[in-house]
Length: 523
Image (tube, rainbow, N blue to C red; front, side, top):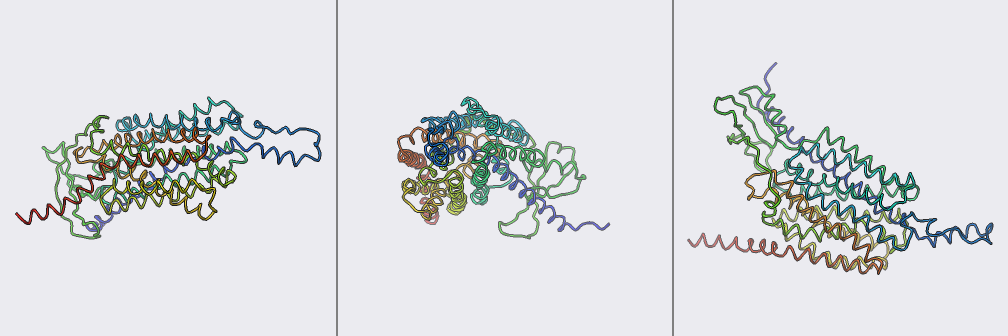
């Protein structure tokens, strides 16, 4: 058989590299979509756990008045609501369920990144997804077996919150391993739309069964995330080097083969090169397709870098600033995630399914906002400034959204889209592109194992706000929804405040560049 020309072999190998990147992008997208899909049902069924019992009683009484005119109505709070959410303090109880999940998630997130760096990500993520599927299904079984204990639901929420922390550091580390810094904002913006896609699918699935059998609103998403956990076990490739090692073992001595990430790998046998590997990098321009191959030999050590410590990660410039900003940005985002359907139900006088369907527009806006934030920050090279501008615009939008009951359907749809984009844009950018940037900061000197810990610190701090937001919403809403929106606007301004130092630094660096050029010319 005639030998394959080197050019064809090169293109086939390059296509293989692109294929594995696409596989990682799509698979991690679907994996975290299933995480958010399983979190959304709790917000959809809130209006079902506590209904407007007085109106239900009136309808039922009117329909049976001809036959039971002399009998008082038997419908009361216990007839139309689910114990223990049938009392006047139902908002506080619903808020406690949210808080139990999110508080456990926040605490677990700090540990998850550290653990994830020391265990195989594929196995760690698989176990977390299977466990999350189990606990999500158990919550739905509370309806099947007629369980009315608040403690049962709280325990399920705490356990689910802990196991769901396996998701975010793992998928961000995988996507960061496969994609470099070039156009990271755009790539991460597109990829991070899994959050909103999961919320939309979760709303639609939960809304389908919410009125007939709300237990299935949890059981079906639980089964889905468990199935995705199985896919994770069989198909997830954590790092390009995992493939390189396989190709190195299968490649005959003295022959070359193109590895992943566009590296043309040459495998040589030499008595003094047992602990060294040679990577021949292709000098490919950013937008070129076919160029001559120029081999550049780089000697690398095979010794694994040690995992970074918690305090070491905090010392990376920008980690604390973005973490505190995300605390308040995520507070706003997760308050909408857990309370928006109920608010629409009360403000717009819609049933649970209609409110759930309408709330998906907020997530559609979030997809657009996340992508725009990524593109703009790539173009300008200013992550903090991009987030700050969106946070500044979000505050008046939140005030306008608080008057949703005074709008018609058209303006309400528009406000949901705009508010979703401005609220979720900074949140998406910080948790993806910014986390990946900081996790591969130049101060780490190439230690890629820091990415999981940095991601966990940033998202863990944000999760503290995510826990506080729904809890405060449950407490403040009893005095009127206006108080909830004042709280959200305050949080938005505080998020902006923690970014001001980084914004000033970015703007100063822009101003200093032309000056340095002039100084060079003068000398």
